[in-house]
Length: 218
Image (tube, rainbow, N blue to C red):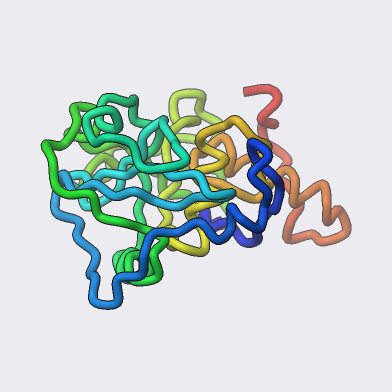
């Protein structure tokens, strides 16, 4: 499971109309390049025209804030919002998103407190329920994927700024129903595997192991 989302949803928000929302973007910037220096702040077009915000962390991930607007808000207001999620975004895809007008650089500012320290992430090898929890550059401990302690930790994955991130932000923000296959945190990744097993019961490679612990239990 990579964590990538794989298709688009289409619904109205606040009565603006889905067609209009899909077209809402920043101006194209043909020569723009990604910048992941710590503190770099971006406005990001999500699904249905919502503007989200992400700041580059010292580890060159992007921390997104629990805030969205129809038009970009003042930087001070954005940076005062709580951190929603910290995601690894493919560097070339950020350049592409800037050039197409899906992302806009707002400047560079002090890294907010919630993004200074690295957050744990989880490596989940295929075919096992044993996972490794990493902090920064070092593996710290192994545990089971159903360990309650790790359920809100991010699965190690690289997300595409244009093709995968908009649905991911919808899922993280949590006000609309997100597509079932949008992962990220370990709890959601476990639910995806359960849903796939339920959808394809005749395919043995999707069958859950005998010692699988259902997400409804933990």
